[in-house]
Amino acid sequence: MARIRNRRKPVAEMNVVPYIDVMLVLLVIFMVTAPMLNQGVKVDLPKVSSEALPQDNNSQVLTISIKADKTFYWNMGTEVDTDTVQDKAVTLDDMTKAVTAIIAESRRQGKTVQVFVRGDKSVDYGTVMSAMGGLQKADVGNVGLITEAP
Image (cartoon, rainbow, N blue to C red; front, side, top):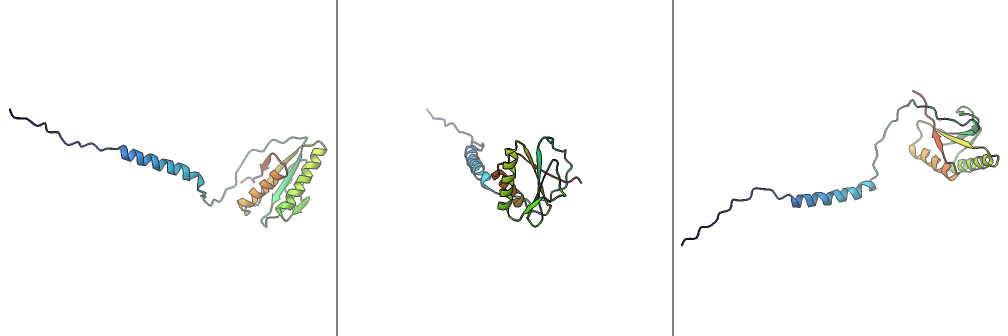
């Protein structure tokens, strides 16, 4: 009796399992390396119209201005005052020491202090962030940023 061979058709399907494995490995690599990348785009921020922050009438307002030459000026009063200069500091450490003294004196008198930062348009982001860090060292909890209306 003659034996009949079964002929199989060639399989024309693509095996995608290796591609899925490679994709998952690449996904893990990108997920691990993406937070390590520090990229940025230079942006010229526009003037914005924003709502006024609520103010506590019983608290003192400390307005800190950062000029284009990276010097710090401040004024202590009952409202935001960007025109009057009460005192100034050339370095961040001097500003931090002065704000620490102002905050300590106000707390000793039982008053709360609201702090607002007003940075010049030409001051770099790092200077404003270092000022925010100095305010954090001076034990300032909340800081408002002042913008100008367009």
